[in-house]
Amino acid sequence: MKSIAQQNNNLKLGDQLVYRVMKQQFSMSYRKMKQIPTQANLPRATVLRQKYALVLLPLLASGKRIINIDESWLPHLDFRNHKWAPKG
Image (cartoon, rainbow, N blue to C red):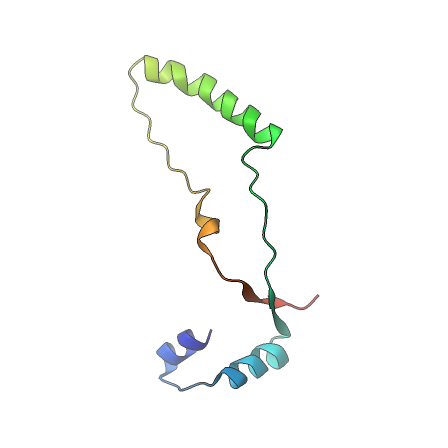
């Protein structure tokens, strides 16, 4: 938030000012993020992968070209330990 405000408005902002504004004006708190476990090996995910393979393997065998765009890894690029979140 601080860097965005500084870039867009050419302002110099201190950490305490950003903290006060986020807390008082927006009722946000800066807290530790919870890690969400990977769900890749849950039974439901395993069954879905098997069903996916049953559909794709015959297509590949028939010479079809398949383009798979996997975006499931995108949420895992955020390595922050804390973030601003609504209170509650």
